[in-house]
Image (cartoon, rainbow, N blue to C red; front, side, top):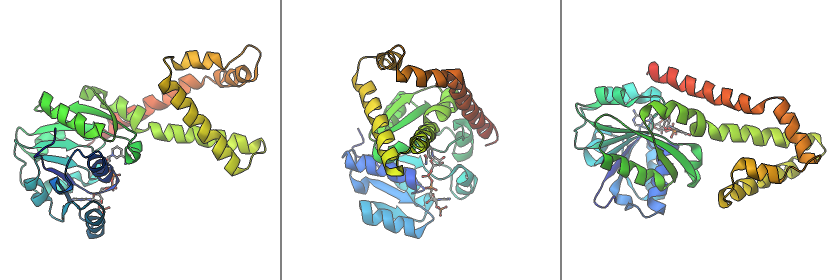
Length: 271
Ligand SMILES: NC(=O)c1ccc[n+]([C@@H]2O[C@H](COP(=O)([O-])OP(=O)(O)OC[C@H]3O[C@@H](n4cnc5c(N)ncnc54)[C@H](OP(=O)(O)O)[C@@H]3O)[C@@H](O)[C@H]2O)c1
């Protein structure tokens, strides 16, 4: 799908590297079809040596080279970046992974009629198990969405949503890895309090998470049904789940995700 397409990254940090790594390792592009501009010379040298891609310290040059421009700087650097470049031509596709910056802001800042697609990836993209939400700006075509989906499918899974759902996506899969790490941490603490060593606790908990998720993915059953199967009447699991239910953990999760989504909405409104 990306034959003859040149892709330029503005910012060559962690997320840009995840995308570069995904595209090259899946052989979706030739390394020399990729360009990165980053203000850090050290970062440029590292990416060039590791991936054999084109690098530059000049954002304007990277934008001129690319058919697709992926914005991968931090949101707080967007104003400085946009002030330092000429308007972007409408024949280029701009894909933004900047958290909390709505497409209308990018459209009105970077050039008349530009095609913008917004993506919210998450950190497991670094190891090819990412989850990304994708939303079209007002000028983006169906082909632009397909292209964006193709790129992010190289580093995990994607869903296409209306931009109004991006705050929810941020609260669920964007912040989601942190909820999982928190849950793992809490179970490890509990295991240590019951006499396990830290190493034993980590092995027990991580393998239990991994095995349970793999079971869920490979089975035809939903989580409630699999849970019912390991919860015999009067047994140990029933007693443990009963404690979780007594603290209404479900509603606590709903509150946490809603709070994260609301914070994303606030950040977007102030962008
Ligand atoms: N990491 C995540 O889990 C995640 C998830 C979803 C979305 N995102 C989004 O992904 C974007 C990138 O995040 P990241 O974690 O990859 O950030 P990062 O590692 O800090 O990478 C950003 C890179 O851009 C460079 N840079 C700063 N200003 C620049 C400019 N004007 N022109 C060119 N390069 C510039 C930075 O250099 P210096 O370090 O020298 O400033 C840094 O190397 C963010 O907008 C974030 O919201 C990240």
